[in-house]
Length: 114
Image (spheres, helix red, strand yellow):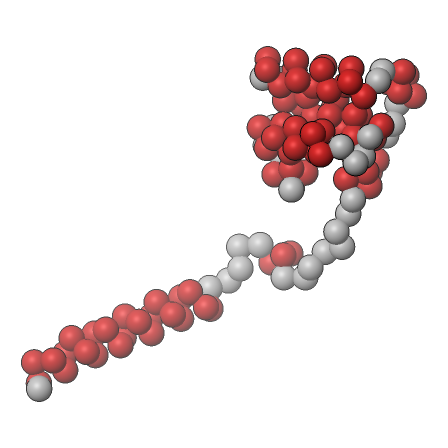
């Protein structure tokens, strides 16, 4: 009986330490504790980049094609800009949202990608 007592206490202490570290460690992102208002894609785009009226002359397909071209060349910021302009023209397009998310991730903007 006594030979099982030491390993049992060791398991109990290690389990307590593990659980206390897991549950009581400080949050890496304290701002995530309060659930923020979910913004729509257009609100985010308008807030970050004002709409240029000279760029409105392009069509949705032209923006997608330009964004794809920049994405394939590895120029992710320009790709994101073109996908954002395409999403302003057609905000319900799932294609442009997926491409915008991928380009934003490659451009190190995970919040915008989400």
